[in-house]
Amino acid sequence: MCFSGFIAIIPMHNHPLFAGRTLVLATMHSKEQVMAPLLQQYLGVQVVVPAHFNTDLFGFIPSNDELLLLYDADNKLEISARELTTANNFAGRQISSVREAQQFAAAAGFPQHALILRTHKHDTHHVQKGITDRDTLLSAVKKRLEAHDSVYITTDMRAMHNPTRMQAIEKATRKLIDKVAECCPVCATPGYAVTNYHTGLPCSLCGAPTRIVLSIVYTCSMCNYTNSVKYHKGKTSEDPMYCNWCNP
Image 1 (cartoon, helix red, strand yellow):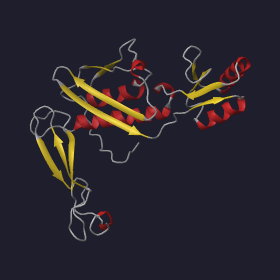
Image 2 (tube, helix red, strand yellow):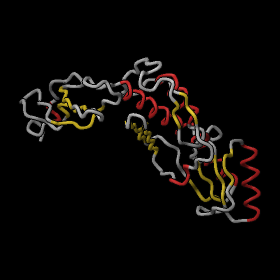
Image 3 (cartoon, rainbow, N blue to C red):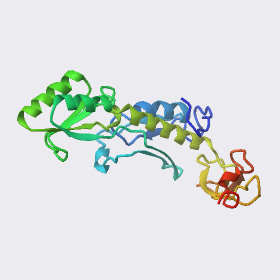
Image 4 (cartoon, rainbow, N blue to C red):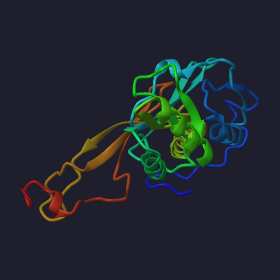
């Protein structure tokens, strides 16, 4: 896949800093399905997932905000990546008929995306998760409606039941790998990353500074070497429509 603003991944099989080492992936809900192959291929590590590590204790949030942190205990090195997107199918609705359940399921991307049923929104005792086929869904809805006036239906946001989340997790993993590929020009430590930016790209008509980015700042987390790079996208000036003088 190609993603907007993505840096091409440099083939780094058996990266010298990580090759042959064990990477503990502290996660659940099968995120390792998309993460482990990429990390093993490009970092040369052996990925293991700890048993009984309950990330549900940290909650879920409505937006699709995936955060990854690579912590190298031997070298005291931290490299992080984030993929924040509005592309998600997070939704929930109190329904009172099978027809409403079918309508919700269609809008949620069912059966590729799983669904959850409960008596009401805050019910934590009678929860049926991971529903991925039509017959099971309709049967469960009918059974619950026989005992209650309505039932609460929601999308299953656990990664292994939500392809949209899996796509975001893959993007975040590729971003992390891209960061590892960027090494400090002074000490060669991976994770030489953008830490700041400066606006002021000049207007192409009057030359006044605009609010568009002029330069980006790279910093090494190991030796603290810093370098400011101008015109990082190859643009040396900006359209007057973005100028406060030409287009106030």
